[in-house]
Amino acid sequence: MVIADIEADLLDYADFEEVRSVGRARSFITAAKRWLILRADSASNQSSSLTIGKAFVESMMKRAQDFVSANDTAANGGRGGVRFLGVGSSFR
Image 1 (tube, rainbow, N blue to C red):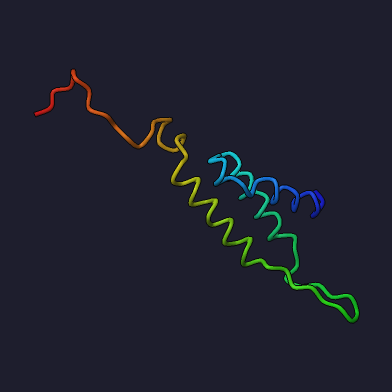
Image 2 (cartoon, helix red, strand yellow; image 1 turned 135 degrees about the vertical axis):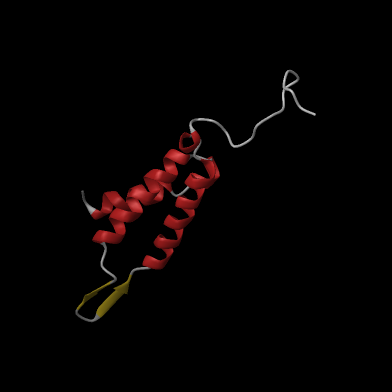
């Protein structure tokens, strides 16, 4: 996998909060992990240098992980976190 492809995935899946998609958040997490592994902290070419903002990608990955934790219904057996009282329930 080429770093340019991973960066394209980061951009593609960065909208997980706007579209409220757990799948996109998981894809962003995977792309962020790959990017953090492969990308250097800094690069230089003789007289010029470039510093990459790993902290931003790490904070976005944390937001994606928090989003998945808060919105993943598969983690709780496919049920939502809200239970409703029905008329037939024995409630006092």
